[in-house]
Image 1 (cartoon, rainbow, N blue to C red):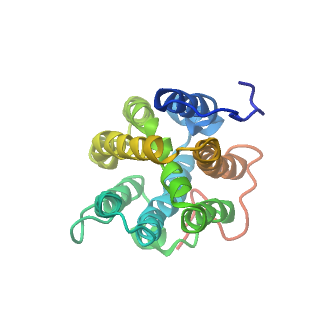
Image 2 (tube, rainbow, N blue to C red; image 1 turned 135 degrees about the vertical axis):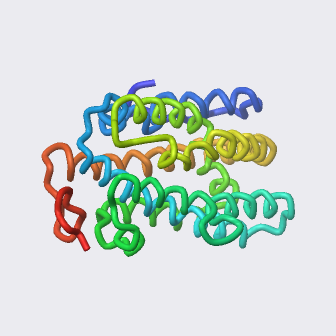
Image 3 (cartoon, helix red, strand yellow; image 1 turned 180 degrees about the horizontal axis):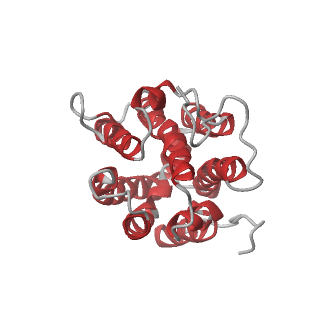
Length: 254
């Protein structure tokens, strides 16, 4: 598959063939291939650039429960609702100071960012907001099958998380396991999430058009993740044009 091609199917795929097509998309389009992630994993980002990454990623993390609540509100399937309730709980936690969002704030705090500033969302790149908000709208407005399929980037998340944690611990002296605790839970949550979503899509995509929708949903989600890193790279790596109002490393951003 070339960089500019997209799989267009002309016949109904078996469940195994559908999974293989999805994994091929991930191999080509998942954001582990982005230059920003490659710099991060090679230990070549400054602390300010890491701060910018963690800050902007917070916006994505904070919108995941909103996205999942939008999906859950649309279905009469109790099994699907129970699954998505669990996802919301994974991110929001069972109470204050628990859950994935809180653990992400430990990362931003550990990198030296003021928590109140992070939660204010004032320094986040406009392009980050546009990309993430497009994802939330997609899940609310497209078919339920496409909404579920858009989560299938989690098929590839565990491998990326393992690589990221090892690289950050090895290459950034100010990073320790405590501030990376968000990723510990995701090593088990992401495979569980993706296993359910994949089985759901294999069961419910029963026409060629529906299977194409599943593939296209994964393309869309990969584009959302890639666009966020494009924005970070352009603002904080090259050419390094930080837009007005966005976080500026090394300054008081309050």
